[in-house]
Amino acid sequence: MLDLLPESQQSELNIILQELSFTKNFRSATAEEWYIFIPGYTDTRTGGAAGKAFLHYNLMGNRDIMMNTTILIENEELCTQPRGQMVYAICEEIVNRLAGYADTLLSVHAGINSYDAVYKQPE
Image (tube, rainbow, N blue to C red):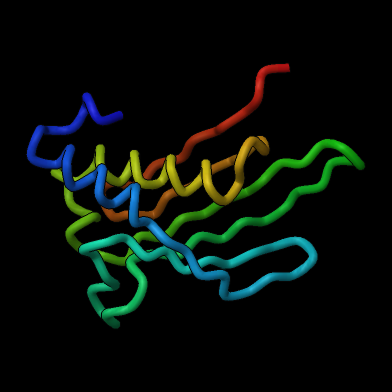
């Protein structure tokens, strides 16, 4: 992912990925809500966490789990075109840390940088 970024953003992304942190806000039997703290970025409106992640467990049996994950980026700078690859890299790291190796349907809401993805383990 680093190779896709301009050199000016590569070192910034390294720092972000090292210092990226989360706080769990809510947990139920089928869902979790996490605040996402991205170094150097805050919620433009409130000054709080730069994003939120919602993980919903879709239990399809006693051994098959599909995670439905939604990430909301609430910083205007990360929702602009020049930050698209950085948002993609940050969200991929969020999925790796919060969902792990579970099959995941991902929806990212980040202005013009919004996208959907599927992470599925080979069978």
